[in-house]
Image (cartoon, rainbow, N blue to C red; front, top):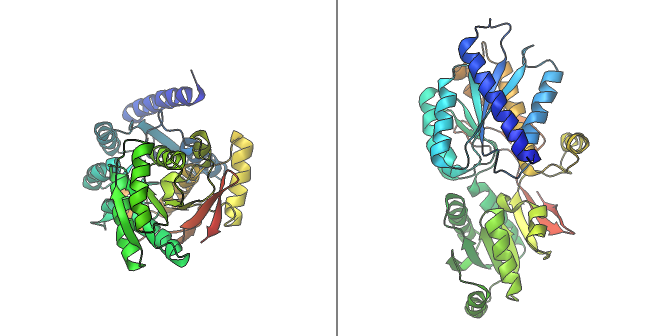
Length: 374
């Protein structure tokens, strides 16, 4: 049994025992634990998200917990599927001991699941769902801990315009993330005088890409915007490179995984992304990186950081409520205003968006995504 599967198995066992205890044991308020639900594709996820949330809990409990009470995470695997995600959301809302939920990873699950949390009045704070659709109605219990696609696309479009990249080929995947980011970029591109000379979502291979490139060349293209997950995006970048096609590649936060790029055979240096988490951004980040590396023997990724910040900010909001009341947590989350975490300065707006100064433009250099500008 590998480390990830073993950890998820143990986590599932702990969650089952915890659920049994919560339904059969009667604890006084002064002795009870504070429980935050986590809905995430733990078994299939290859990021360091779980390590990040676990370290946050350890840090909080070492400092005395939340007003003297121990913080506990109740982890449920949503398997990256809508039906499982909805079932996990229902289970968490029905558990009155759960004070808030961190999840889900993907917008296509977070969006329908948010309706369940909204109806139950339970906070859902997504660390990584960037679709503008998630918070379009606003004002409820749905929040995100990362800028939306619109903000990320705006920063990338500004970077391209400032550096005189004005003619772009847009490649996207036919899923909620790909379409959402592609639409957001196309909207922002027009405001910065950038022309989308082609937009497509599939191709048959390098020969087709070479044929397409002859058409793009006639328009004087400068490069590619890649609206895709790291797996699909890196495959596209690899195929374009194998076809001998030149140009800058730009994309969103989903591509922020240098090790995956290396595994996919990407050795190009001119890959620029709009993402979050600047390792050199503040002393909080530097301290976190050192502590995380010492504990896990790995450099933290953006998901570990977003998970860590999500647990910490919810802990602060909970500590400001009168009796950990679900209805108070949303207002306390907003009242935190400019809140500095490992990622940088978060600010949760009344409609649920994170409008803090978080987006950083990075470039792949020497196998690492390094800051170009904030």
